Structure formats: C-alpha cells, structure tokens
Length: 293
Length: 260
Image (tube, rainbow over all chains, first blue to last red; front, side, top):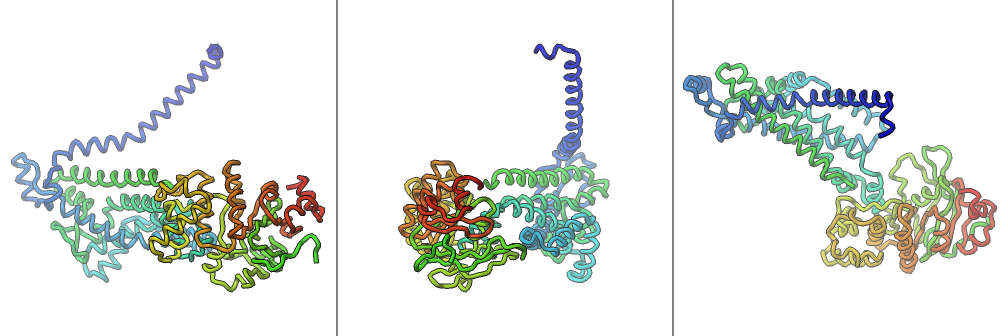
C-alpha cells in the first residue's frame, strides 16, 4: 500500500468513491419507481384478491356501495375482464404471429433487397403509431364494417397491429444471428429452400421467436386506449368475438370512473402488473435457457 | 495442353472450363479444367483468397444459395451434367463437409446423421434408420463413442466428434463424392489426425475432394493435388510428383513457403 500514501493518489481514490456513490444513487433512482409501484399495489390491492376475484364478474355500483357502507370488501371480481383479455390476446396472437414471423423471415433472408428494407422501416414506423390511433383505425375497419358494433375482434385487431412490428423485428434479429453454416449444411443435403426455413432456421431460433412473442404479449396486455374504441367493455363474460368484450385494463378505467369501486383499481392493477411481469420474466428466462450454442 | 496439369483417365468428376464470378465482376475462378479420379483423395491447395473454396462449392452447386454468383463451363459426374440434375439428386451423390463443424443444434446425434432424409421428407422404416445411423457412425469411427448417447444433442460433442458427425451426415446418403472445405482447420492436432486417418480409410468407398490450407496435410493424405493461385489452376498432378518436382515456378514458390 506504499503507493497510496501520496496525496495525489488519495485524492484520486476519493474521487473514485464519490463517482461510485453517484452511480449507485442513480441506479437506485432507476429501480425505485418499480419498487414503489409494487409496494403500493400490494398494500392496497392484496386485501381484495381472493377466490371470487378470479371467478366472479365485476360487481355493480349498488353491490359496491352496500359493501362499503357495511365496511366489507367489495364482492365480485374481474373474471369478465380476465377472460376478455385472454380472448383478445389469443385472437391477436393468432393474427399477428404468423404474419409477423413470416415477414421477419422475409426480411432476414433478403437483407439486400430494397423492398425488404422498406418493409422493415415501415414496420418500425408502425411501432411508433400511437395506440389510440390504431384503435381509431380498427374502429373504422372492424367496428363499422365487419362486426357492425364494438367487438372483441375489433379489439384484437388493434392489438395485433401493435404486436406485429415487435414480432417482425425480433424474428428478423434472431434469424440473423443463426450462423449461415446451418443453412449451408441443409442446402448441402439437397433440402429445398422452404424446408430449410421451416425445419432448420425456425426451430433453431425458437427461443428467440418465443421471447419476442412473449415480450410483444406483455406489451399489449395492458393496452387500454385502443380497446376503449373497439372492445368497449362488458359486465359479463363474453366469448363471442363479434360482441363487446371486457378486458382488465378496461375494467381499471371503469373502476377509476366509479367512486364506489376505487379499491378494485388496486387489485386489478396488481393482477395486470403481475401478469405482465410474469410474461417478462418467462421471456427473459427462456432467452437464457434456450440459447443456441 | 498445359504440361503442369495432368489429365485423368475416365474421371468420376470432370470440371471443364469452369469460371465463376460474383456480382458479374472479375471472375473469382478462371477457366479451370480438371478431372477427379475415383476412390482417391484430391486436395485443392493455395494461398488464402485463391478461390479454392469457390471452386469446391461449384461442384455441388452451393453457389445457387447466392443469386449473384455466376458459374460458367461444365461439370459432370459420371459423364452426367450436374447442372441438369435436380439439386437434391446431385447433393445426394455429392456430399459436403464444412470448415466449422455444423451439426444441427436442434437435433439429436441420431437425427443429425439421418438429417438428409428427415429434412427432405423422405420416410424410412425405423429399422432402416437405425441401420443407416449405425453404419454411418461406424464409418466415421464415432459409433463406439456415442452409441449410448444417440439421443443427446449433437452440439454436446467435442469439435472433432462434431466434425466426424458431420461427415457421417454426408455419408448417410451414400454419396459418390464427398467435398470437404478445410475440414480440420477448426480442430486441434489430435482431432485432425483422426479425421485424416478417417479420410484415408473412406477413400476405399468414396471419392474425396478436399480444400486444405495445410500443405503438409495435402502431402500426407492426398493422392492428387491441385495448386490454385489467384483463381487459376496452376498445377495439378499426383501429390508425390507435385510436391517433389513441381513444374510451375509458382507452385514451387508456394511449396517452399515463399508466399501463402
């Protein structure tokens, strides 16, 4: 430690420590919102979460009012929202995944093509389109002309458009990382092009594809604005895709607008955030575990 | 007739006036003609960038992967023009092994061996598949090492084992010719020796054309050697003669380490 005796060295170490302290401080600042949110949601929402919360439809204002007056927890749950969200997310996935994956394959296979790079840029722009605008468009296309009324189909269409660019780019990026040698190995065995894609490239990039899909799902799970214009909401469980349907974020908005239902906001938000975090964590895990050597 | 290039009697594979160019610019391979003798090992040597791999890849039409590549001239297998054969038929008869071992990462060892059948959608009976897998792995002396782990991923094997697996994958089709593109350049010396011994063994049943960076490898195992320089075939002859008594000055310079 002889070297550190000198004054310049000690000053330098001091500066180092101060800088280190700053870095830690800002790192804590970055994670603190999430911690505060989780803390608040759990504290306010956990009391409302019970078996009924997942199996019962939303209560009406009268039930909520009575419960509040008697100092009880509000009866009912958000089953209609959970089912609606699942229905629309599945429907959106069915629409977006095949289109997105195939577009991603096209982009990664034709990196020098002008048209492909145009498609790529347009898909990037699509990602920047505000979700409310997608809601408006989906209203115009589906609500007005296909289902002639608010519907789950219209809701999932807007969600599918939101998913598309994420899936396209993640598919493209994953496929680009697959060494060209696998492709060549398959070609050298006489395998035709479409089979190389389907049987070699896509399976080898499965983890990347699934990660992209899960991240895009967690992105749309909480979307509210486009659903307001398209799915509208419903107080009952609805499985008919041509009918108005509820969703968890729509319910949160509804509860917010009803002074009697405030405590349901916290529990629904807790549930929604839990779901999104769950998808996120699975996606991260999967990306790690299935990594191709 | 160029005296530096010998002609082969009744060649299994014959390359006639082949030129290959990328992006219609300067040809990478210029007017190469050569025959390949059956049941022999033919080595293609030359300094980096002399287009030896480019020439090799023309033999099983791998260039079709890249639409900007143009191949002129004629290549025939058993006096059949390869450009008139279907790619699948051609590649069943001419297998290829690459520089870096590339077993399919999603497949087991077993599936990797029969990947050519599987990926082409050719249905085989279980017993036939077992037979092909065992035979091919035995041919590459991998059977004893992996027979208890056939359903593990091929990527768990060592580099040398992976490369032998890749050779087995090519052999599973019972090809006439196996093309190897610097098959040992990514391997350690022990694995390299194993592959070299294996190739010498395999030439009894197959015809081998290999690109190699490694002169001594060519000298050790090949029967015929080609020396390419700047896209041209400079010299082609029996390995023993070419190494001991090269005709062309450039071959001599390369062999004595003056460039390369």
